[in-house]
Length: 260
Image (spheres, rainbow, N blue to C red):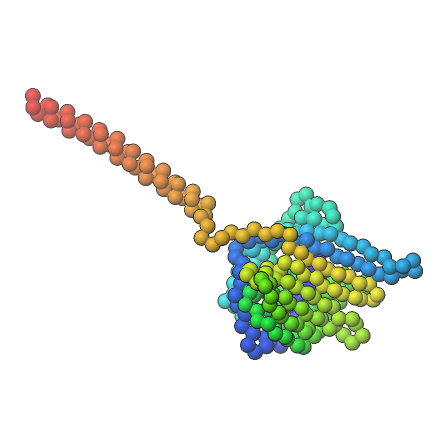
């Protein structure tokens, strides 16, 4: 399922790359459709096929304090080639937060770029040295040092990132067009266009739905503890009242005996 699996990178982030703000948090969940369009030539004309998949990504935790910010996630594939997975199993891993100005952030483990920094500034980055593995080509997985050119633009409510991967001389470059929500930094639409050995493959990620747990929401566990504490307090008050009534009865009897 992963299109771009990261293996190795060299060089460092360009000067001035300081994007560090994100808009996601633990327990956020995102459902994506993942479509693969394939076109290739045959003696009888072009043949086209479409594969439809769907999966969910849940955020476990985030960390932007390290040189490479990262997100821990749980991923479950719920549909493969149009067939629903009856018992999807979740895989957990960490991936980098995408900053197109930093070549190291192209090396995420999840296989695409669902999370980006929200404070990305408009601009360009040229000749970033990245080594990526491109899966799904007729020759299998292709790996090698590649150069990446990227541009970032900001519009109404979104951040648009385009980057082109130049694999080698004589090989058509692959182009990536990514749209992010400017508030959350979550990918809403991402397409990778590739062309290898007369086979054209387009990989399309589309955000289908999302759920967000607002910060400060009442924790069910905390609610249980508060309720338990309330029960204990009520119980203590009840016991105190019973004890007080009993003691008052004893004192009343003692006073009556003393008056006799």
